[in-house]
Image (cartoon, protein in one colour):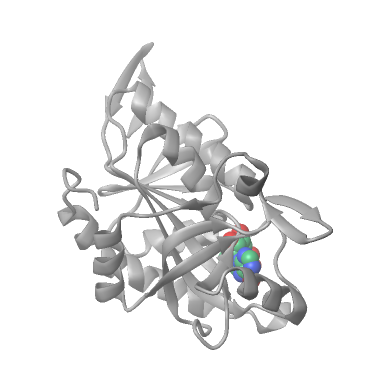
Length: 249
Ligand SMILES: O=C(O)c1cccc(C(=O)CC[C@H]2O[C@@H](n3cnc4c(=O)[nH]cnc43)[C@H](O)[C@@H]2O)c1
Protein backbone atom coordinates (compact mmCIF):
# COMPACT_ATOMS: atom_id res chain seq x y z
CA UNK A 1 0.00 0.00 0.00
CA UNK A 2 1.21 3.49 -0.73
CA UNK A 3 0.02 7.00 0.06
CA UNK A 4 0.73 9.68 -2.50
CA UNK A 5 0.14 13.41 -2.42
CA UNK A 6 -1.43 14.59 -5.67
CA UNK A 7 -2.55 18.20 -6.05
CA UNK A 8 -2.58 18.54 -2.28
CA UNK A 9 -4.76 15.41 -1.76
CA UNK A 10 -3.77 12.03 -0.41
CA UNK A 11 -4.58 9.12 -2.67
CA UNK A 12 -4.16 5.47 -1.74
CA UNK A 13 -3.70 2.22 -3.56
CA UNK A 14 -3.23 -1.22 -2.06
CA UNK A 15 -0.43 -3.74 -2.42
CA UNK A 16 -0.82 -6.90 -0.35
CA UNK A 17 2.77 -7.88 0.44
CA UNK A 18 5.66 -5.94 1.97
CA UNK A 19 9.17 -7.37 1.58
CA UNK A 20 11.84 -5.83 3.83
CA UNK A 21 15.48 -6.38 2.94
CA UNK A 22 18.52 -4.86 4.62
CA UNK A 23 20.34 -3.45 1.58
CA UNK A 24 19.38 -2.35 -1.95
CA UNK A 25 21.30 -5.28 -3.51
CA UNK A 26 18.96 -7.71 -1.72
CA UNK A 27 15.88 -5.66 -2.67
CA UNK A 28 16.98 -5.69 -6.31
CA UNK A 29 17.56 -9.46 -6.18
CA UNK A 30 13.95 -9.90 -5.03
CA UNK A 31 12.77 -7.48 -7.75
CA UNK A 32 14.47 -9.57 -10.46
CA UNK A 33 11.93 -12.33 -9.74
CA UNK A 34 9.20 -10.10 -11.18
CA UNK A 35 8.74 -8.89 -14.74
CA UNK A 36 8.95 -5.23 -15.63
CA UNK A 37 10.43 -2.25 -13.82
CA UNK A 38 9.47 -1.42 -10.24
CA UNK A 39 7.75 1.88 -9.56
CA UNK A 40 9.44 4.02 -6.89
CA UNK A 41 7.21 5.47 -4.19
CA UNK A 42 8.71 7.70 -1.48
CA UNK A 43 7.99 7.10 2.20
CA UNK A 44 9.50 9.05 5.11
CA UNK A 45 13.13 7.91 5.22
CA UNK A 46 12.88 5.22 2.53
CA UNK A 47 11.65 4.48 -0.98
CA UNK A 48 9.24 1.63 -1.70
CA UNK A 49 9.85 -0.26 -4.94
CA UNK A 50 6.45 -1.47 -6.09
CA UNK A 51 6.30 -4.43 -8.43
CA UNK A 52 3.04 -6.31 -8.96
CA UNK A 53 1.62 -7.45 -5.64
CA UNK A 54 4.88 -6.70 -3.80
CA UNK A 55 6.23 -3.54 -2.20
CA UNK A 56 9.99 -3.94 -1.69
CA UNK A 57 11.79 -1.84 0.91
CA UNK A 58 15.50 -1.71 1.81
CA UNK A 59 15.30 -0.84 5.50
CA UNK A 60 18.98 -0.86 6.51
CA UNK A 61 21.16 -3.28 8.45
CA UNK A 62 20.19 -4.51 11.91
CA UNK A 63 17.02 -5.04 13.93
CA UNK A 64 16.48 -1.39 14.90
CA UNK A 65 16.62 -0.10 11.31
CA UNK A 66 14.47 -3.03 10.22
CA UNK A 67 11.81 -2.29 12.84
CA UNK A 68 11.79 1.45 12.07
CA UNK A 69 11.50 1.04 8.29
CA UNK A 70 8.93 -1.73 8.51
CA UNK A 71 6.83 0.18 11.04
CA UNK A 72 6.80 3.24 8.77
CA UNK A 73 5.52 1.25 5.79
CA UNK A 74 2.96 -0.72 7.83
CA UNK A 75 1.62 2.37 9.53
CA UNK A 76 1.33 4.33 6.26
CA UNK A 77 -0.63 1.42 4.81
CA UNK A 78 -2.89 1.07 7.85
CA UNK A 79 -3.65 4.80 8.00
CA UNK A 80 -4.58 4.75 4.32
CA UNK A 81 -7.05 1.94 4.98
CA UNK A 82 -5.17 -0.68 2.94
CA UNK A 83 -3.06 -2.69 5.38
CA UNK A 84 -0.57 -5.27 4.11
CA UNK A 85 -1.63 -8.92 4.36
CA UNK A 86 1.88 -10.16 5.12
CA UNK A 87 5.38 -8.84 5.64
CA UNK A 88 8.45 -10.81 4.57
CA UNK A 89 11.95 -10.29 5.95
CA UNK A 90 14.26 -11.42 3.15
CA UNK A 91 17.93 -11.40 2.29
CA UNK A 92 21.19 -13.20 2.62
CA UNK A 93 22.34 -14.78 5.87
CA UNK A 94 24.88 -16.94 7.61
CA UNK A 95 24.17 -20.68 7.75
CA UNK A 96 25.00 -23.18 10.49
CA UNK A 97 27.00 -26.04 8.96
CA UNK A 98 26.22 -28.67 7.92
CA UNK A 99 22.46 -28.09 8.05
CA UNK A 100 22.40 -24.90 5.97
CA UNK A 101 25.22 -24.85 3.41
CA UNK A 102 26.22 -21.82 1.34
CA UNK A 103 23.78 -21.33 -1.55
CA UNK A 104 20.90 -23.05 0.25
CA UNK A 105 17.64 -21.45 1.36
CA UNK A 106 16.13 -21.30 4.85
CA UNK A 107 12.57 -20.32 5.77
CA UNK A 108 11.96 -19.42 9.39
CA UNK A 109 9.40 -21.34 11.41
CA UNK A 110 10.68 -19.33 14.37
CA UNK A 111 12.22 -15.87 14.23
CA UNK A 112 14.25 -15.58 17.42
CA UNK A 113 16.39 -12.76 18.73
CA UNK A 114 19.59 -14.31 20.07
CA UNK A 115 21.29 -11.49 21.93
CA UNK A 116 18.51 -9.51 23.62
CA UNK A 117 18.83 -10.06 27.36
CA UNK A 118 21.44 -9.93 30.09
CA UNK A 119 24.71 -11.62 30.91
CA UNK A 120 24.63 -13.06 34.43
CA UNK A 121 27.08 -15.16 36.48
CA UNK A 122 24.96 -18.15 35.38
CA UNK A 123 25.15 -17.25 31.69
CA UNK A 124 22.93 -15.41 29.22
CA UNK A 125 19.33 -14.70 30.28
CA UNK A 126 16.91 -13.75 27.48
CA UNK A 127 14.81 -10.64 27.92
CA UNK A 128 11.76 -12.82 28.68
CA UNK A 129 13.68 -14.27 31.65
CA UNK A 130 13.98 -10.70 32.93
CA UNK A 131 10.20 -10.31 32.73
CA UNK A 132 10.05 -8.27 29.52
CA UNK A 133 8.85 -8.57 25.96
CA UNK A 134 9.27 -11.50 23.64
CA UNK A 135 12.14 -13.32 21.95
CA UNK A 136 10.38 -15.41 19.30
CA UNK A 137 7.79 -14.71 16.60
CA UNK A 138 6.17 -17.63 14.75
CA UNK A 139 5.20 -17.32 11.06
CA UNK A 140 2.02 -19.06 9.83
CA UNK A 141 2.84 -22.80 9.98
CA UNK A 142 1.03 -23.95 6.85
CA UNK A 143 2.49 -21.11 4.79
CA UNK A 144 6.01 -21.98 5.95
CA UNK A 145 5.40 -25.60 4.90
CA UNK A 146 4.11 -24.57 1.47
CA UNK A 147 7.04 -22.24 0.89
CA UNK A 148 9.52 -24.90 1.99
CA UNK A 149 7.90 -27.36 -0.45
CA UNK A 150 7.89 -25.04 -3.43
CA UNK A 151 11.33 -23.44 -2.96
CA UNK A 152 13.28 -26.29 -1.37
CA UNK A 153 14.05 -24.02 1.59
CA UNK A 154 14.72 -25.82 4.84
CA UNK A 155 12.37 -24.76 7.67
CA UNK A 156 13.89 -23.97 11.07
CA UNK A 157 14.81 -21.25 13.50
CA UNK A 158 16.42 -18.14 12.05
CA UNK A 159 18.28 -16.13 14.67
CA UNK A 160 18.47 -12.34 14.64
CA UNK A 161 21.77 -10.97 15.94
CA UNK A 162 23.13 -7.44 16.25
CA UNK A 163 26.69 -8.68 15.87
CA UNK A 164 27.66 -11.07 13.06
CA UNK A 165 29.09 -14.22 14.61
CA UNK A 166 32.86 -14.35 14.04
CA UNK A 167 34.19 -17.31 15.99
CA UNK A 168 33.63 -21.05 16.38
CA UNK A 169 33.03 -20.50 20.11
CA UNK A 170 30.19 -18.03 19.57
CA UNK A 171 28.69 -20.24 16.89
CA UNK A 172 28.72 -23.24 19.27
CA UNK A 173 27.24 -21.11 22.07
CA UNK A 174 24.35 -19.99 19.84
CA UNK A 175 23.66 -23.56 18.69
CA UNK A 176 23.73 -24.82 22.28
CA UNK A 177 21.08 -22.24 23.19
CA UNK A 178 19.10 -22.68 19.96
CA UNK A 179 19.52 -26.28 18.75
CA UNK A 180 16.95 -25.78 15.95
CA UNK A 181 18.79 -22.78 14.50
CA UNK A 182 19.69 -23.05 10.82
CA UNK A 183 20.74 -19.50 10.04
CA UNK A 184 21.45 -16.06 11.46
CA UNK A 185 20.81 -12.62 10.04
CA UNK A 186 20.26 -9.15 11.46
CA UNK A 187 16.72 -8.00 10.63
CA UNK A 188 14.04 -10.69 11.04
CA UNK A 189 13.15 -10.01 14.65
CA UNK A 190 12.96 -6.25 14.03
CA UNK A 191 10.60 -6.79 11.11
CA UNK A 192 8.47 -9.15 13.22
CA UNK A 193 8.35 -6.76 16.18
CA UNK A 194 7.08 -4.01 13.88
CA UNK A 195 4.46 -6.33 12.37
CA UNK A 196 3.14 -7.68 15.69
CA UNK A 197 1.19 -4.59 16.86
CA UNK A 198 -0.50 -4.47 13.43
CA UNK A 199 -1.50 -8.13 13.71
CA UNK A 200 0.30 -8.65 10.39
CA UNK A 201 1.72 -12.15 9.82
CA UNK A 202 5.44 -12.34 9.10
CA UNK A 203 7.80 -14.61 7.17
CA UNK A 204 11.59 -14.69 7.01
CA UNK A 205 13.48 -16.23 4.11
CA UNK A 206 17.27 -16.30 3.89
CA UNK A 207 19.67 -17.37 1.18
CA UNK A 208 22.88 -18.56 2.80
CA UNK A 209 25.90 -16.51 1.70
CA UNK A 210 28.44 -17.68 4.27
CA UNK A 211 29.00 -20.28 6.97
CA UNK A 212 28.59 -19.07 10.55
CA UNK A 213 31.91 -19.22 12.38
CA UNK A 214 35.40 -17.72 12.16
CA UNK A 215 35.17 -14.55 10.10
CA UNK A 216 36.29 -14.92 6.48
CA UNK A 217 34.58 -12.14 4.52
CA UNK A 218 36.40 -13.17 1.32
CA UNK A 219 34.58 -16.52 1.44
CA UNK A 220 31.07 -14.95 1.38
CA UNK A 221 29.29 -16.04 -1.80
CA UNK A 222 26.99 -13.05 -2.06
CA UNK A 223 26.30 -13.40 -5.80
CA UNK A 224 25.23 -17.03 -5.43
CA UNK A 225 23.02 -16.17 -2.46
CA UNK A 226 21.37 -13.26 -4.27
CA UNK A 227 20.67 -15.55 -7.25
CA UNK A 228 19.10 -18.10 -4.87
CA UNK A 229 16.96 -15.32 -3.39
CA UNK A 230 15.68 -14.32 -6.85
CA UNK A 231 14.86 -17.96 -7.60
CA UNK A 232 13.03 -18.35 -4.30
CA UNK A 233 10.78 -15.33 -4.90
CA UNK A 234 9.96 -16.54 -8.39
CA UNK A 235 8.58 -19.72 -6.83
CA UNK A 236 7.02 -18.37 -3.64
CA UNK A 237 5.16 -15.39 -5.15
CA UNK A 238 2.33 -17.55 -6.57
CA UNK A 239 2.04 -19.35 -3.21
CA UNK A 240 1.60 -16.03 -1.41
CA UNK A 241 -0.88 -14.76 -3.99
CA UNK A 242 -3.00 -17.90 -3.44
CA UNK A 243 -2.60 -17.75 0.34
CA UNK A 244 -5.88 -17.48 2.20
CA UNK A 245 -5.56 -14.81 4.87
CA UNK A 246 -8.93 -15.81 6.31
CA UNK A 247 -7.21 -18.95 7.54
CA UNK A 248 -3.74 -17.53 8.25
CA UNK A 249 -2.13 -20.64 9.76
O1 LIG B 1 28.65 -6.29 -0.58
C1 LIG B 1 27.66 -6.62 -1.25
O2 LIG B 1 27.63 -6.64 -2.49
C2 LIG B 1 26.46 -7.05 -0.53
C3 LIG B 1 25.35 -7.45 -1.25
C4 LIG B 1 24.24 -7.87 -0.57
C5 LIG B 1 24.23 -7.90 0.82
C6 LIG B 1 25.36 -7.50 1.50
C7 LIG B 1 25.39 -7.51 2.95
O3 LIG B 1 26.41 -7.33 3.58
C8 LIG B 1 24.11 -7.78 3.62
C9 LIG B 1 24.18 -7.66 5.11
C10 LIG B 1 23.08 -8.50 5.66
O4 LIG B 1 23.36 -9.84 5.46
C11 LIG B 1 22.91 -10.60 6.53
N1 LIG B 1 23.99 -11.51 6.86
C12 LIG B 1 24.71 -12.20 5.97
N2 LIG B 1 25.54 -13.05 6.57
C13 LIG B 1 25.35 -12.92 7.89
C14 LIG B 1 25.91 -13.57 9.03
O5 LIG B 1 26.77 -14.47 8.95
N3 LIG B 1 25.48 -13.17 10.23
C15 LIG B 1 24.53 -12.20 10.36
N4 LIG B 1 23.97 -11.57 9.31
C16 LIG B 1 24.37 -11.94 8.08
C17 LIG B 1 22.46 -9.62 7.59
O6 LIG B 1 21.09 -9.69 7.66
C18 LIG B 1 22.95 -8.27 7.12
O7 LIG B 1 22.03 -7.25 7.27
C19 LIG B 1 26.48 -7.07 0.86
